Figure 1: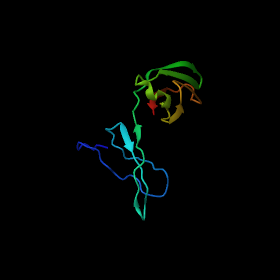
Figure 2: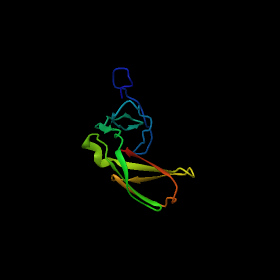
Figure 3: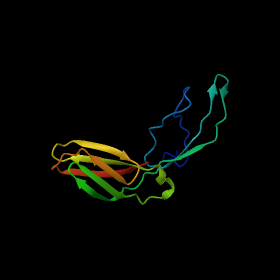
Figure 4: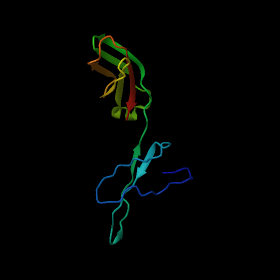
Length: 135
């Protein structure tokens, strides 16, 4: 990646015998990355394979969170999906965090659609809900 010096940088991110690697330290200011791999043995270095390009777009926040069905200990939440570009929307999921304001307990569920059903809430306790989109 560029690292702010005006050009691409070749950085070794993995050396080993496994055919895969997890890259955790990517610059947060970048959204597109290109990776190449090659074999190295006692005879030398082989040629690089074709580059793989990855986008790490961060989805916009969901909008208009609403509770459409509330009953004793249960709630159904809906929201509008992010307005970000559609090319990666199929890979978006949502984390719904809910907090019991009286006890301070915090829980989270993951859903694939813009709707979540939450049960097991304490009746007569105030609850706080928030949703974020993930990709």
